[in-house]
Structure formats: structure tokens, C-alpha cells
Length: 130
Image (cartoon, rainbow, N blue to C red):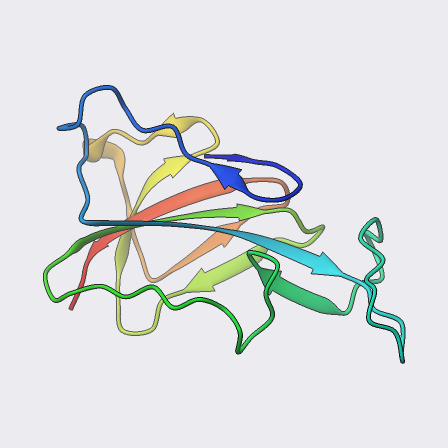
């Protein structure tokens, strides 16, 4: 996944049997500054932000990630903010499957309940829906 100003794009492997998943989600964490009484963000502000977003949307307007029981799920997260972000999935443990350096070999993946996504970085996690 590469991150750009308006979104992300995912390049899937040529081999469809390489690490297949049932559900594949991607989101970008961003931050913006809104001055009181305004509706236009200062998008270039990097240190005095007051709004946090996933895919440029603020909670509760964030899209849900629906999965079925037993689905193999991948979530790709990119951090465009100036702050590292811990991400936690309630009720799930996951394996860290991809970093900025590429795919983590299955033998080297590690289990987590929370993953820290550093500034300007991308992380991907995988788990079974339950």
C-alpha cells in the first residue's frame, strides 16, 4: 500500500494464492487543524492539529469493516500524522504481516493485541473474524 494526499492504492500480488484473505481493508490516519468557527481545515498544519481522521472522516462517520465469522481479514494502516498511533482491535488478536519493509515471512510474524503505527509508516495485520 502506498499513501498519497487523497488516499491509498494497493498492488495485489500476481499470484492470487499468495496470502489470500477474505476481507482486505485499508485506511489512512490523518490530522487537521480547524480554527474555532471555521469549516475549512488547515491541511498543512503539522504540529497544532485538533482533528484526527481515518480516511479523512471523523468518528462516528468512519466506515465500518464488516467481516463474517471465520473470515481471514487483513487491515492495512498508514499514518500521515506527526504522532505515532497505537491501534487496538477490541476482541481480536492479530499477526503483524507487513511493514514498510514488505511482507513479514509467516515464520517471523508476531502476535499482538495492539500495534504502534509510527509517523509516516504503514503496517498490516491479519486475523480470523470471530
